[in-house]
Length: 115
Length: 114
Image (cartoon, rainbow over the protein chains, first blue to last red):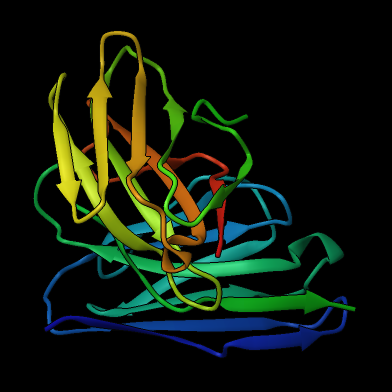
């Protein structure tokens, strides 16, 4: 069966510090991968998605970046965190064929607090 | 700006009562409508994916309907139980996107009290 791992679960970082959140998927090949953020009181905002190694698309301009160094590994990074980067970050995967008629499967999330 | 609207934002239900809530989305360029359940301290879990106008899906006491022409979906919970307490998210995908991207609503938080 497929599983998704996301870490760390919580993170407290000072403004201006770097960030690295990691997500890995097991039990499937060539998944579509997604990074979402949920700011307080708002819905899930898609940040990045990837359909293959090295193929990253960004949905919103920001100081975050994403990379996919391996087929089932997705990393969210920042060189300098802003206060506005606080929130709950979720990684998700879906099968790679078809359009949006496949469910997405989510990790447990990372609660990021910027001080 | 969210094109997907969910109402109400929250609701309280007595155990045993039935309830329903709404997801509204753009009726043009529709491809799929998803419902997810997000319990506290857990990750969102897919409930249904619907693609055809008139679709009805059921999972236990939870069911959903879809009207793509007018751009809405209802989620129903019959005989609510405390374990149904969660935030229910809907999300829609467009016909012009081939990478499985979804646009999520802000959710309806359901609290079932004994």
